Image (tube, rainbow, N blue to C red; front, side, top):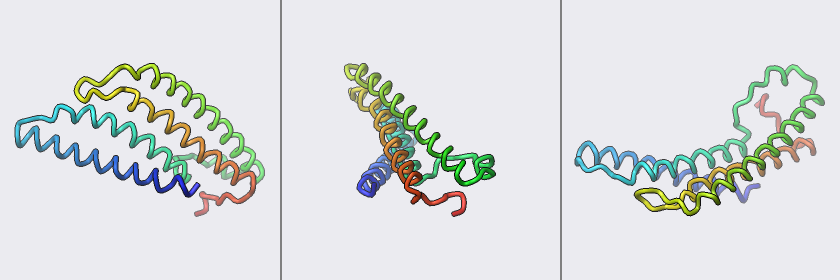
Length: 157
């Protein structure tokens, strides 16, 4: 999965930098120059959506999603492994179902465009199914690690 790490990191970094620069520029233009950037809000929504989904992919890749593991930590190792497999399979199923719904929404909205930038809403909405598929890929990778017994225990590290 190393081949996916660098592109996700770069896209995330570029999107975040663009959002910070755009926000600062918009504030400067509005309050110092008294000339607001009319496109800043639409571009911010676009960037936020992509940052959220790319960040979720990166969090799953690094096994950094928030978990409450009090009950799981009290269970024996084999039971924990079975629960991890069940939860991973369920998560992949839900993610792929959500990706299908998100793709349907993105395709249905491809003829709608934003008011100022005239960008198709497809490019905003497609971030969700791409994010769901990306998360499910890394969840499946982690699941295979659990099944092979090569997954590191994040609770002790």
